[in-house]
Image (cartoon, rainbow over all chains, first blue to last red; front, side, top):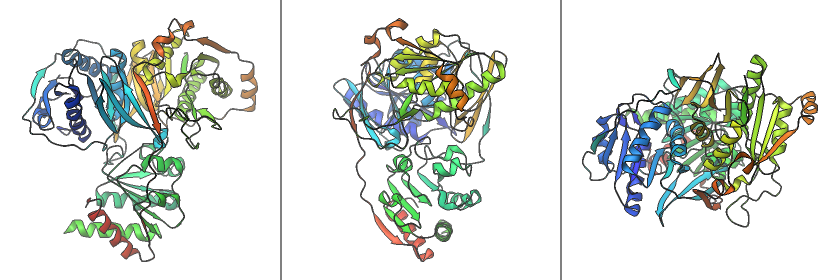
Length: 318
Length: 259
């Protein structure tokens, strides 16, 4: 066993950022574990991009849109063929759906949502948030093949000098998948997911009512970020659960997190305090959110957020 | 139509986490344990299926003796049977737990198997799909809408910015997301009735598995630590909104380099 295999996810004909991040950390792991980095994808057109991020080989199967059982069967073939030491998935909806299915098939261990990875002493060492980020666990994954899902934004996506990956076709196994995709519907028109966003603008109970989330949406739209929300606002029905940051929502670590009207309950802080830059706007100068903010503004969000949106728009217009 | 709901008992989400002396686990002293929040949605959905179509709802939990409390609570809410598989799950990895649960599920009649989408705390989100694979069942993961039809299920699966509508034959594994339903509270009548239902108790070996296959395998936690204390940054007065906005933009451009 040698080398690292990365499950490559494609969006709009390109590798998702989280897949490029996985390839980048995959290269570092391969330096220690030996062997090359390879990727799997459903479209051969990403061979150039996969190569740029370090993949020597691209396993390709014409499997169409994601479904669990078929993808598990195809990925198993790539793994059997390559015998990698480590298989990486982005910790996305599909990565988190597929990694455990493949792991159970191979009797492999999984480290979920890893934000640090290294190869040491023949084992994959992973650090991962637990208790919604209130603590971090370091785990050792051993066995014939170690699996990890990588947390979006935790590993920098860095290009290498590599040329296009060599394409290796994998025959699609003839299996009758039980679960079938019957349709897809966009949950809220054009809204960005918080899971992989670089910038999140989040609102809390300080917004006073559901309609005022428009202030948060306007700023998020102007700045090119996703809309986040505190648990209180989700429980009050002001906004859909998929926006919730913190325990029973998502643990996120974007480059920039702007919290407006969020006092900072322990679950929320745990879910966002690993963000790289945090700005908090709150009228209560004692609000716990200020303990984690790099820049805290004590003031009225109803004045400051629209002023900020205008300022951002002015800048973008130039 | 019979359902199984797998229950994880976890520290209360409000709990402050302290690290135990061994540096590998949490200090459980003074911690209140609850049914993992996502499992509540799973249980509620199974009870609704039972109310509409009849059958049993069997709750299964693998863990130390304290998990009987969680099972009792599920019975009070409307589960009809309970199975406790005894074991120190802190020393088992997700696949070990999945092997035990798969064996336990095989031992009871079922058409549907429900999980929460993740156990709050360890936050792995692995066991449901692993059990599906071990049993050879289809899985529908992170479900926000569910319908049980004749021999098949239709469910909405949450993905980034969209939902997929998935159809699968029974038996199937479904993992519940927040928003799937509004879980009920236990009624006084339910609490009284639950006291009369015996909780079946089994060991790992009763299920035909060896402890050595389940514990201390593949994934071992070597260290547990609290996140580093973050140094608070600057705090400024936002009385002048326009000035505050300019200050924020300056920070975003110069520090976060995001504009």
